[in-house]
Length: 348
Image (cartoon, rainbow, N blue to C red; front, side):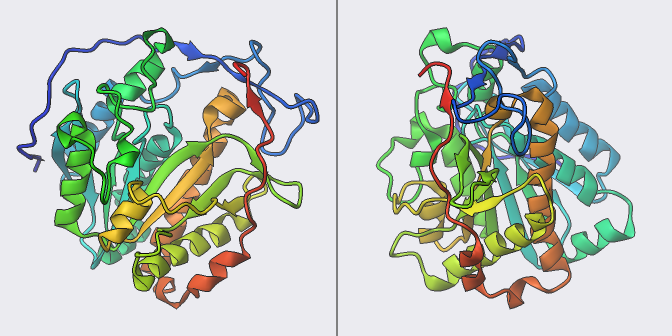
């Protein structure tokens, strides 16, 4: 049954038409048609068409359909509204003792996590013994697309407006509103909604999906994903260790994938990001940064989505089979450090 929380938001009508966005160029040292994990996108030659990704309307339809078809195991709660009045949903599957939250797209131009999260919901709600095992062990909560207004601008290529689609429609970076932030939260209803929800739910782990540009490693590989836990010095050791275990599990889960290289994201102690702010509040949070679709082109979006889905599956699988708690949190340091950026945008 769907519930709606009484969180105030400004409702403004918004229309959009999906368009393509500018692509990015390879560095002089890289081949334009033969690189690890897919071809580089050449400026002006392979625009990234977003029509294959879920629009805001399509995402809502997917959620409604899932609730309609699998209402016996799926529940949907509207936890708030965006500045422009779009619904923010928390979709819950399962009733296990460990609550895992997957949140995506707090930056509007970072959509791959949302695509993977919808696939995860379908898999975990399926009428299969494997899905039932997960539902018995885990309460999975997916909060997809925390910045739907930013995605709407990104989807219609509205750079001319001067408002960065990473930010919400009040020009707030929602990922700087956690912990001790002095942000006026009336201007960030999306962040207020997720923070209120997480404080009520008190999940055992939050997986927070983002995009980054393309980086290498010291071994000459390409970093397709980078992970980092709450590293602020005031984060409790046990809170950090839970997120470290998740990072290590993800690294192991993707180790056999020839298209994935997981690295450590550079440490930052900024207290107002989700991973640090939530961790300071006692909620283990893992930042997961993927190479973005704007870097690799539309043809590689499927590979990136599969990578994100595998990372989610790995964590749920380890909790379900009981191996998660036996993971040595310090094993995460077996992952390589993220190296230098190896690409620049066409605009630079």
